[in-house]
Length: 120
Image (cartoon, rainbow, N blue to C red; front, side, top):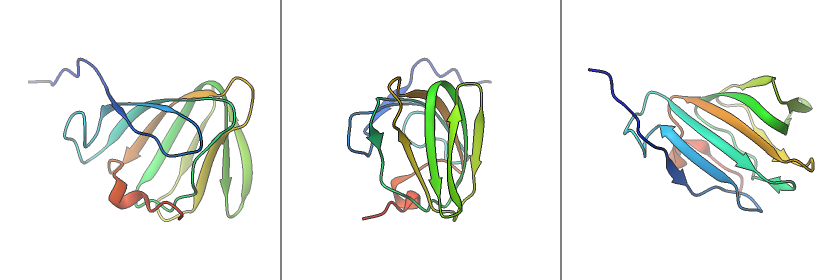
């Protein structure tokens, strides 16, 4: 029988400003470890610590601009675009533009605090 997810769980976000994370599928809301799917809404000026996760992350920007920094360079991901970051790759996300950003993040396997490995 398919499992209906009736609502997300709001997860506490890392970073310098409040960011809304609504996990639909993942370790917290659906007790799913294979994948996590979350809707993110971050304000202008939000920056999270860099991280070297043990999961691949697939991000689709719905509104605004997500700034992504890696050891190889930096790029802006605009509404209608997507980015893939690979496990073991250092990455840092931010939303410097005035409109902030709204995006969907899919992590395989599911996001966890034990496997994200954020910078100190």
